[in-house]
Amino acid sequence: MASNELTLDTAGVASDDTPEATRRLSAGVKASLYLLCAYVAIALFSPLLVGDYTTINTGQRLQPPGVEHWFGTDHLGREIFARSLVGTRTSLMVGVTVAAFATVFGVLIGLYAGFFRMADRIVMGLMDGLMAIPGVLLAIALASLLGGNLITLIVAITVPEIPRMARLTRSVVLSLREQSFVVAAVSIGTSTPKILFRHILPNAVGTLSVQATYVGAAAILTESVLSFLGVGIPPEVPSWGNIMAVGRQYFQLAPWIVGFPGLFLCLLVLAVNLLGDSLRDRLDPRTNIRSDL
Image (tube, rainbow, N blue to C red; front, top):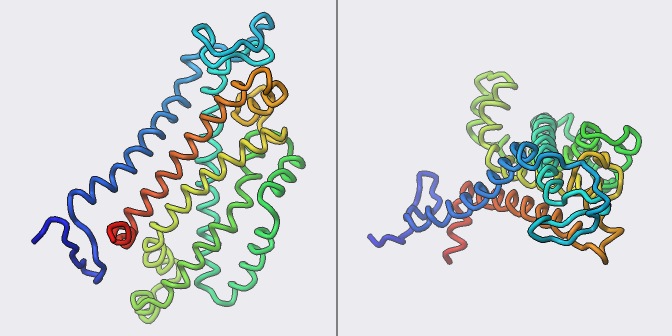
């Protein structure tokens, strides 16, 4: 049999078990994981490596990138390199925390709405109402009311993301609810929590994990937008968003203040999205078939 021949798995779906396909799939995973590991290392060790990143040195203000100042300095003479590295911690913390909370609450709401027909209309009506409000505007309103700090920012970004995760979970539950193994579990009197968390949720983990990576990427972007608009992280805490917010006033004189934090942001979001795409490709064998056609 040729090495690139498709075979049928036990579910009757064609799959490609060749080593080439495995290497092709793992390349995307490795690339995204390497980037994310680099960012995690930067977030953990940057405060120890860069030293003091808050000292104001007016004699070195708006210095261009060079040997002495790798990423240049801002209007107060602070190192953009040091502040960009330390800002990684804020973005990663926001992305991971928002993805975790939005997934937990969204999955619980989606399971309840998808499995119980009576609650579906009421619960999803509330979710649709939240989704009708633009996420950034809702986050700005919450951040403005509750004050600007990290906890408020996480809450403000999480709330708009919960309805999206809830709707996805509901759609998956609706498709699984009529499957024979769920009907059989109901017919023998299996308790509802056991059906939801032992039979339905494990079959939805693949789809939900992919969505969670996109929620994390969206949270990182939203944090930068809110900080850029002045309703996110306080200015004394380095964040890519507030670094760029300061740099926009001096963009014509010192574009590096905006450029380097923006590059950090783009690479992190790209790494998270690559991880989500790789998970989707690995968890959906039909994607491999379409790519080979």
